[in-house]
Image (cartoon, rainbow, N blue to C red; front, top):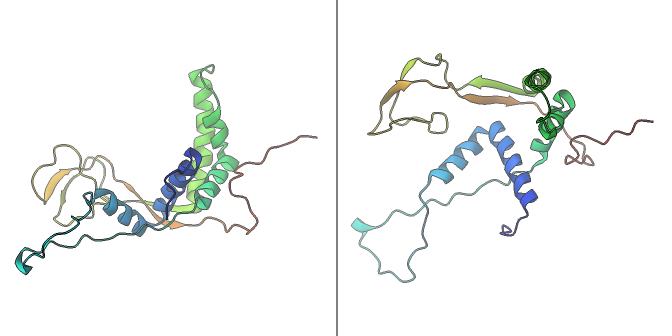
Length: 193
């Protein structure tokens, strides 16, 4: 049973954990998309007369969501902090810095983040065609892999241009965590002696 009084940080942790779980599990992503796109199911009337078979309403599909633990998301944040000082960069108040200073820091953060992603994930484009290429989206296309934008009217097949090739995680290689590891500590405090 879910707690409807979940704290902000509890919800934030769940959101971040779910985000990274979706990146690593395409079946989970497809199930979440189908739940989000399903029309809201209103409760059935208390007492309704049985309908003849020819007019029977289809039964709504009951979907269950897999509980996502935040450990993988926290682990990834820890890796991004260790290799790219990602949290330090995001938490820094950059108002007083010049664009040149921010750009130099962003280059280091970018290099570290890229190194982490390449070491721990295999990321491939969803579509192989170059951006700007004309494509036809057939009837029955995978809505988790292709999002139609612009003036979407009518029924498939649709013709259009690729504005973004999309990204798909093909493999996740996060290190295993020891049972006693506290994943919420993404960077330990440092005390210089």
